Length: 116
Image (tube, rainbow, N blue to C red):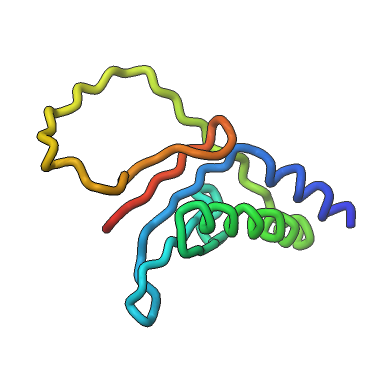
């Protein structure tokens, strides 16, 4: 039980979440979410938000398993922006109907959707 409590606290840290839009075995769209620092910690859902919530639940279990087996728990990565990037001009027709990138969740967690 001490490992569970510690795992739940560690899971609250701002880990990076990558979300991909994939297809399931029936060809239906499904979102798959991964913790970047622990690439085998995976969640899924019918929506972006469901996938993120699912991987967040899996994260505490994943960390608890690492602790139970005396493995190192990777810390969250930090992303710093200190450069200005010039963006190309876009025509309205170039902008997708649904966003291909979005930020949500705790401060410091960057999440994105890839349509590839």
